[in-house]
Amino acid sequence: MKTPNFYSVIIGTELLNGRRKDAHFKFINQELLSRNWEHKASFMIEDDVELMQNIFNLIKADENSVMFCFGGIGSTPDDYTREIAGKVFTNGKFEVHKELKQKIINQYHDEAYPHRINMATLPIGSKLLKNIVNDISGFYLEDRFFFTPGFPSMSHSMVKEALDKLYPKAEKQKYRKTITIDTSENDLIDSMKKIPSNIDFSSLPKMIEDKRKVVLSLASYSEDEVNKYFQIFIDYCIENKKEYVLEDIFNL
Image (cartoon, rainbow, N blue to C red; front, side, top):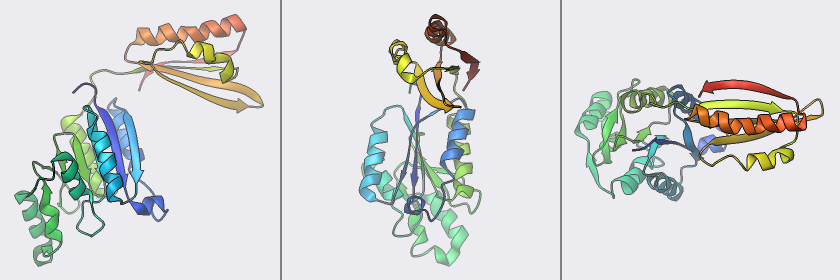
């Protein structure tokens, strides 16, 4: 795999209708950034089978994808994640995971049957993630598709386990440089067009005391490349007598 593209999928109709607040995105985004990784995309979706399948297929189509999925691996009728994960990632092949089956029996005894025991039927080839709350594991496939409960107290430790084991830290670090210019975005478009697509580039307009300002940011794994194209905006400011404020390059 080249540089992994990280995706998160947060499943829960109750998040979208406001009955609960999401606690996953901020957590996983910070965990990725602390390891010099970045999100490619994050999806918050309702408990809808067709939508889930489409999102999983979209992520699977990226040969460099790494996915963290939150929610839907329980035993209630609206827990679809295990089923859809098997359809998408293992061609509909499932197996009873013996270790997880025993964990469920140990935790719930007679109450493991008839429903909770179904949580042990996983997509074939699944490996387990430790659940520090009740020992009912999450699971993962191909060392890159991770499925965790919707409860942050359970899932967040699983995410850390997976990242620490398989994606501890990016070998390369991006460098970013930022400039705030006293001008409008429109005046900078010609300069913006000179930035190649391989450089992360963003432009954020803002108003301060009725004065237009633009915050421009460039990032790349090459410090020299950032400096080269960043100079375009310095030159613009000098030539057009625009005031500006710089920020030094820093690691993401």
